[in-house]
Amino acid sequence: MDGELFPRARTQVAPGAVHIPDWLDAEHQRALLDACRAWARPPAGLRTVRTPRGGTMTARQVCLGWHWYPYAYARTVADGDGTPVKPFPEWLDELGRRAVRDALGDPVAAEYDIALINFYDSDARMGMHRDGDEKSDAPVVSLSLGDTCVFRFGNTETRTRPYTDVELRSGDLFVFGGPSRLAYHGVPRVHGGTAPPGLGLTGRLNITLRVSGL
Image (cartoon, rainbow, N blue to C red; front, side, top):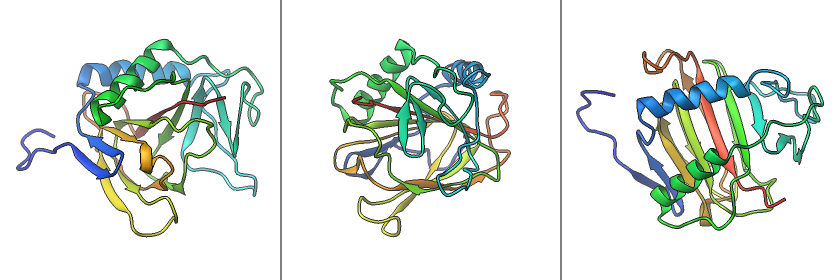
């Protein structure tokens, strides 16, 4: 945000977990948004995720590379239209690797091959959970577009305290790996109407990149 009294700084939220504000500039945010809009179209497009107990997630999702559904991966949209999952582009792997280098300073040996793209409207939330369905311990890369959210980053033992609430705005990067790779995290609130005016997005998109190890 222009004209802030205290500009936001890079922060290590926990060991192996780093927040870098404004990592994507306006041009790269628009390009990533255009890609997300293409990926969200059917077939294998944006869907509502249903849990095994019959509930639904309020954030809608589309996957690339491998299709995630509670709590497994498949090559087809097993809980949707049954079509093959959209391919994971090479440039997203390059983006993920650059994000990890910038955040943690270490290269990633494996290739990123999964993207989970979640769309949040102002009423959507994400409960505390761990990204534990992969066979790899490579860092998770999280990119934000659109509305600002409260991102709650916790610990590896419990969904409850201790945790840290981080404000993620459009263009922000959050990477977590190493001792924080299996930390619980969630989104308790989205601040509607806070997206950059020039972006052209109502709501929030979160692009999460992972290494499957599959």
